[in-house]
Amino acid sequence: MQDCVFCKILRGELASEVIAETDDIIVIKDINPKAPIHFLIIPRKHMNDIQSMAHVDFFYGSKIFAMAYHLSKTIPNAQDFKLHVNSGKTAGQIVMHLHVHFIAGKLEGAL
Image (cartoon, rainbow, N blue to C red; front, side, top):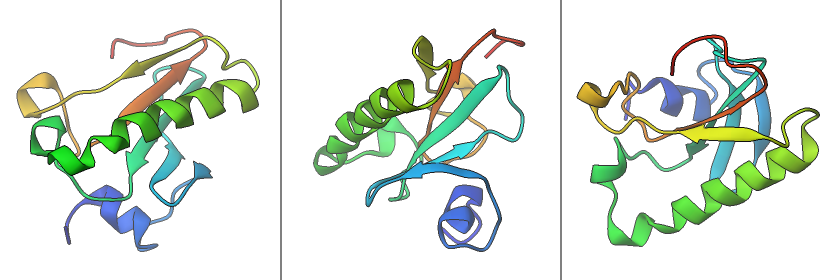
């Protein structure tokens, strides 16, 4: 997707602070954090939301959980965390590229 902010980050057209990455997933710092640790876990493949996933894409769910596990083990003070996903505009999704919020530490605002 040409206009997708996350796709632009993945292509190197926009700068972002990368926390971790694999062949399938990238993790970046959220630019509007709601807690001391607020990362976005993003599949490299563009999918608008959960409803847009094909059955062959469901493996991304396990990749996202595996990354959350990795982050909780390697990032200081991230052993207790929450995962949050908005799927669709009326659910609060702003960037239409499937992503999961990894949030740890004191929550500073509603999410």
